[in-house]
Length: 164
Image (cartoon, rainbow, N blue to C red; front, side, top):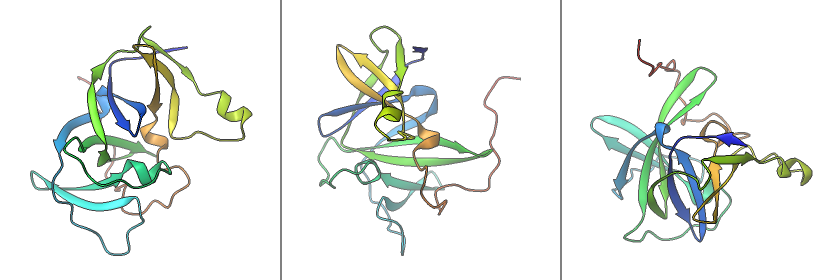
């Protein structure tokens, strides 16, 4: 078991996911996304966020689900992604953002079962429970494992957000 902080919970179909709240910058209502030429299917395009170009990824496509039309509950979750000492701000298009919550017992279990099933599970950090329902904890830094680096990550060095 791993002790954790609060999570922003979201849904894709009837599946619940959690993202550590310290990696979430903000939650946006749906807005126009400017498509990028020759982008991979999961990369919807970019949005302007106070002068910053933020790539937006469709979580459904990235996680192997069928695309779905937008609804009034569709949101863009703006998160910080880190990889190899670099960082990027990224928008994740989700069906619905539910709330910020703690897991039932404040802990989640690593996904060791994935190894038994010959599945690397790089996008899932572990499994927890909220009000008895299963929540898959998304591992943001492993979300793009196995995909080309493309335009998602920048060469901008990671910035420490710890107090000096």
